[in-house]
Length: 91
Image (cartoon, rainbow, N blue to C red; front, side, top):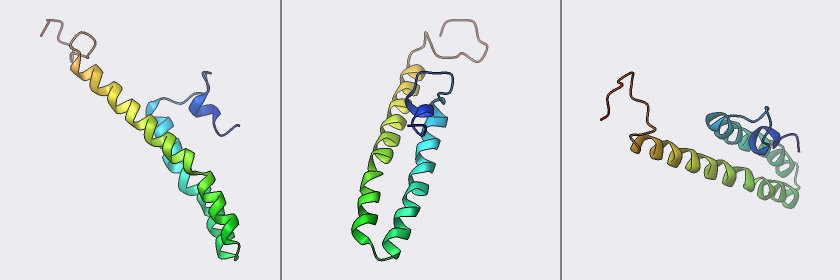
């Protein structure tokens, strides 16, 4: 449960959009390394089970990245809420 707190919890420990994406994309291969060791030790069914169990991390990382990109696109397309580089005149 501690692994998911920075990603999903609505607390002061929650990471920003960039942090959540990096956290999950970097964690996914690191969590699969023990599974590779289990497969190398000859327990292929257990190792493959571990790898399949980690698939939600990659799916959630892709979904959070997609959500973040779409939110940035909406902000860039909306002239009312987009930053104006110090220009105070309406465009």
